[in-house]
Length: 87
Image (cartoon, rainbow, N blue to C red):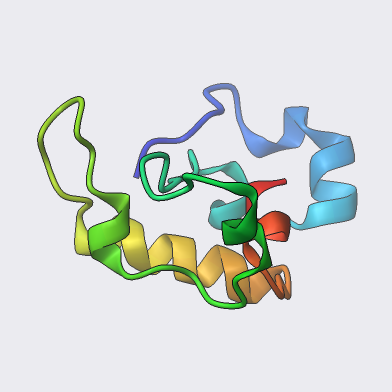
């Protein structure tokens, strides 16, 4: 998992105050860029399948562990649609 912080969670006092100390908060997110082709996708109420996260630029699929982290993120923050996942 790629972490966005290098100096420790304690230096992110506002983040940890409002969003917790959980690693999912500090991990780089994954996004289905090529799947999100129009605004109607924002209304979808489930995370798209792992195949939707395929990276065409690198020509590689998303790792299962990264997909599970995306699912955990969606669950942890009670996201009800792709618009919330996007934001």
